[in-house]
Image (cartoon, rainbow, N blue to C red; front, top):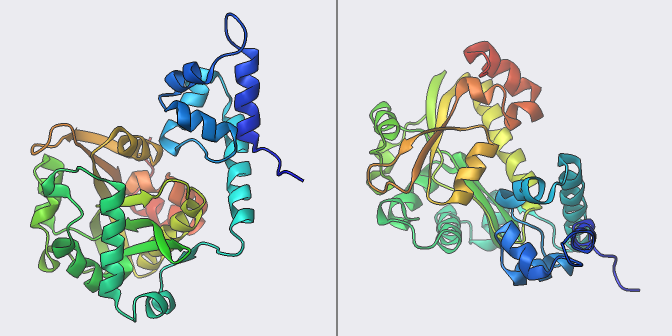
Length: 301
């Protein structure tokens, strides 16, 4: 028996059949409307792919779908992916995985995560490129400040959040901070309770691995909870975006746009404040984080 089509595929085909001035809307017209290729539309309708998260808003804005429609399609797609990958589930990078895949070397694991960033974000300005000589030692030294998700023994998703020194935090907000100048001794080690500023150089989910997002998000929440239980809170964390997709992720996380970067004016400087964290997706999934951050910073409007 042939597998059933995804809910997303069925709804797209149905939408095309019910719209259009003279009969059904063509795949070419739908591709132009959603800002994707005709090949992408074909894959959607053959249940081979799902629309990128940064483009989901176009389903509501351009096709008139409700949030409930989009959520149902996303949930159906993630369920199908989990069912299809039962033999090779997603798993978090940890000591066991490092021992199994990288001969016990966290440095090699860090290098693999940087390779993922290079492949996922090509053509980035050299001051912000995924540089092994810069980030390799940082990731090796601060192992708990980044995490990756693997599938079939390959890294497919990653987050990182080193803490900046106050002077680099100031440069970040001024739009003059560049990653290439980072080093291990310019990362702040959280030894005592207090408020710190985190910088996110990478938040990556490889195409076709949206199902890894749930595990990636859970690992980041775990990190924030571990820090909070030690009295370590973020009065904010920031990121520098190099694409419209990155900007959409920042908006989805509730981050605030601060300015364009001085080195590359097409790049954006974004921040989520401590008060914003209290009302973020992270706090929504963790009552403990909500309580800690609300008591420390209040809640952003």
